[in-house]
View 1 (cartoon, rainbow, N blue to C red):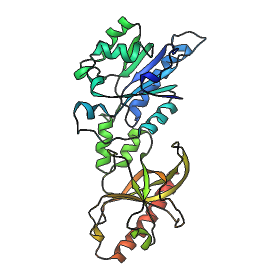
View 2 (cartoon, rainbow, N blue to C red):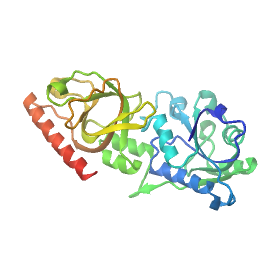
View 3 (cartoon, helix red, strand yellow):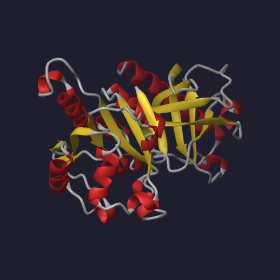
View 4 (tube, rainbow, N blue to C red):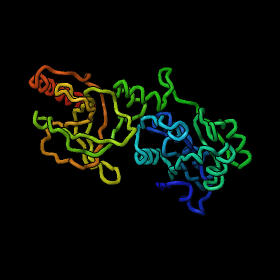
Length: 324
């Protein structure tokens, strides 16, 4: 899969393509439906002739447009830009174009947006977007206007209906709300996979090691969507430099302050079950959240805390064995 950082990296000889465009934070099930439809349109049996398949290009943005349009309002992101591209590639995208979303870019009117992004560089033959897609300065453009501009610039337009689950529209906003509430199971259902938090392991207070449960303390990038405070069952994953998985371990995960020791700092740390030999300092790792075990508590004694940690580990082992 090709990755372009900006439209300037699109090859000069790039031909026609089927394009889908959006932030796609989290690449949740609703996004998967949109990309899947773009892939369908690119196939030979979708009307482009039996002898060829058009490439599928996903256009997405960094930083999040909200940060430019409303500075300081950057929502917690559900995936890093690299993981977003990996997930989109796994859905069948041939290229992912990460467009820098600048103030100047935000000022493009709908016609300029379409000409600059879709027509001049990517030579759109078809454009697939969500039914609520908005574009151009002050979000003036919608799907009907995109279809009208498509007639001008010679591409077809399709707005894919939003996906709902039990009457709730699947959206990045809804998934963030579930994560904030600690409901990682529902978030995983709507994402189509466990929510992942990536980061670098740093040296903490080493209290876990002193208590017999050495943990990897995770320093994640700014604006990462961290689940609400609590104890979780999940997986600790060591990542290669390119983001691919190197090794994974079942893990009991703590999110929040350590109230028993009077610490107010909010941390994310994971104990790889039955492993006290791991040296992960400085490593790039990920935590995949499966389910919430309980809320955070302040214990009257270290002995009470350790007893509860043993119970958390046993419950984690049980749950992850059931869900293999």
